Every structure is written in C-alpha cells, then in structure tokens.
Image 1 (cartoon, rainbow, N blue to C red):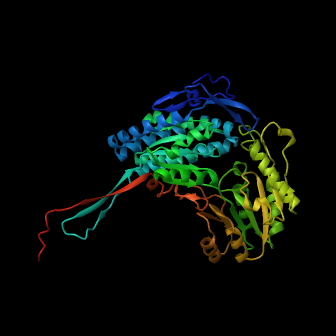
Image 2 (cartoon, helix red, strand yellow):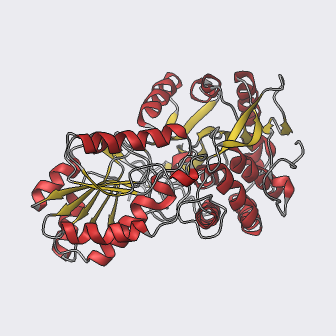
Image 3 (cartoon, one colour):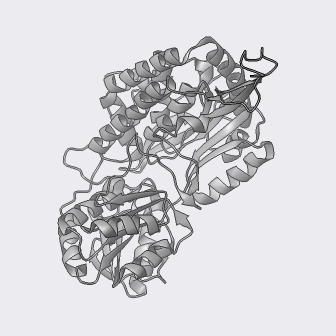
Length: 502
C-alpha cells in the first residue's frame, strides 16, 4: 500500500485505507501496474487511486478460493466459523468511525448515514454468526424398514460477489457473512466507484481470522474481466446487486455452468398515501424513503401516489420538510444531503425533471443543480406534482432526489397503477384501516412492503424482489440457505427391527 498522505482526512487506523487487491492470500498491486482513479462525488476531484486487475487475476483468485474453501470447511466447525464472524463484527464496531469516513468520502453520503451503514453492515455479520450454528439437517422417515434417510447442508463452494456503490459496506456483509458462515469462499468484485470500503472490510476480515484464500477482493474497471465470475466453472454461485439489464446478462452467462444465482435488481417502488392515512407519518415516511442517501437506494420510493382528498395537504407538508434539507459535503457538520455518485446520475435526474415539466408536471421544490456546489455532483431535493404515466419517471428508476407525485381517486385504481411495472422490489402504503392494510399488502406485487413506515431494511427481514427485480433472498433466517446445497444420505440394509414380522 502506498502513502496515505494524499487522502483528505487522517484515520485513526491508517491501515484501513487499502488500494491493493487481496488475491491468492496476498495483498498486491496489479502486475502491469495499472490503477484507476476514484473520485470524491462532493468535489468531483480524485480521492485516491486503486489497483486495476485483469481477467487473469480473477482466474487466479477463483482457483485459490476453490482450494481454500475446502480446507476452511473441513477444518472448522460451525461454532468456530461463528467465532470468526463475531471477531469480524467486533472489529467493524471498533473501527466504525474510520470506516464511515472512507465510505462517506468515496460514496458521498453524509457521515451520519455512513455510520448508520457500518452499523447495518455489522448486523449481518453478527446475525449470520448466530445462524451458522443453527444450520440443521433433517432425519426423514423412510418407507423401508431397513433404511434411514437424513440430509446434510454443505457449502456451495466458491461464490462470486458483485456489489454496488450505493451501500459499499452493507452489500458486502449481507452476501459475504452468510457465505463464510456456510463454509464457502468468496471472490469479490467491488464497485469501481467505491472500492476502498470493500477493501477495508476485507482487511478486518483477515485480521479476525478469515483465511485470506476465502475472501479475495479484485478491484477492476474492466467489466469483461469480472465476467470470469459468471463463467468460470469453479464458481458455483454468483450474487449480484445492480441493474436489471446487467443481472439478466450475468444470469444468462451463469446458466452456461448452471451456477446458483442471487439477483437483487432494479425497482420502481410505489409509495401510496390513502385518504385515511396519518399524514404526519406519511410525510416523514416519504422524506426517509425518498431522500435518504440522496435518493440512491434500490428501495427508494420512485412513484408517490396520493389520494386526491389529501393531495395538497400532503404535498405542502412535504415541500416544507424538503426545503429544510441542507446540501453539502458528506463529512461536513450539518449536511443532511450529500451528492449523487457521478455526473451521469445528475444528468438522469435532470432529464426526468425536464421531461416531466415539458409534459405538464408542476415544480414545487428544487429542480436544479445548486450554484454554490457546482464542483460536485449535487442536485437539489426536488418535488413535482401533476405527474402522469406518460412521463419517464413513471417507468424508469430515477435513483436520485426526485419526488414525483401522482394523484388517485380509488383503491382499485392505485393498486393497478402501482403494479403496472415490470419491477417488483419494494412498495409502501399508508392507511389507518386494518382491513385495508391486509387487503392492499396482499394485492401489491412486491417482494417487500412497508406499511405506515418508510423503513423496511433490517437484518431479520427477508430482502428480495419478484418479477424483474430479482431472484433469491438476502438476510433473515432464509439467507444462509442461498449459500448451501442440501445433500440426502440414504443408509440401507440395516438390521431389521425386532418387531418385523409381528
């Protein structure tokens, strides 16, 4: 690792700023010396440089992991793997402030949000430490007197992990912790926008006792190089969080060797405010659900449907709250809204706003890049009303701080509109009617639903979508099974029971 002198803040634990990859058990730079710049979104300037690896490096990492997981699984008990995960959890807690600084600088989110993400990321490690020792098989009653049948749960093997930039810590631990708990090895392709958080987590994992051959991190800007994770026969599972188009491509490639796949893909989340909603709850829920991380979460509300009877009351309250938000550099005191990740993200928000206004939407707040923050990738928290289904924001995920408000007049109408999308990741609605809560929760075509809350993500809650929003489940009691194979064992020709023949 090179000097940290160019990094804009001092860390209490400087070793956490790692720019090399972890391949075949060693920290190293790319063989050809290649690096790629990582930009700080708040300033638009280079934050630090990271090693840029090739397809050959991915192959070496995969082959090392293939040998490593077998030794790891065969030489550890579930309780010992749990102890390693607990040690990793405690190291994250001890280094929370440094990890949050790295995350905030490379991602842009506020320091408070970054600290919250480190706590959230830690929770998956602790959860799967506990799940590791509760991975039970079954004894199955046999139809034959001289047979016994039971099942074992075994690791799938090498897992390719491809994670996004918007939650660079939590998306690592939500995938890697269950893999390690099951006895797998992982080869991680971290996001090129935010590689340093991933590398810091890997450094702490090795310090906690994870064998270096079982957690390999291969940063790259070469997308074709990372495709080795989807095609190499030694990789038995691939877990990806990102766009639906890329997820489809990876799934198609993975089918060539029939890998298990977990895909957490795009969304177009509806957020419904019924006429009987508590508007204070609904406004607070919309503020959190739409504007946290500057609207850059896969479960953000993308389409806000408000009943016509409460439309203006809800909108005016939300406008007032949004106008109190403060844009700025994530690590600065008082900042509530950080930047978007890059220039393309800003341009997408702007295009959605302009498209909507041209087609008749009304701008109620924001709607431009702030003049005093032009060096970074900032966009004002924005609210538009009079939104209709012919506008781009209705069918495309904005992934930015744009609250697009539609009106509706009946429950049947809004459920139909909410479901009129190829996506089915998250959905939200607000109502004080218990009957409506159960009825609408059953009708919305989403993998996850928030009722009277904008928060739905927690370690104990299954995370995953339906339709074109993905395959598989992360977190919760179901998450460990995604990294396991079930093996049945039949023992025959046992001594017959003394009762036979009676």
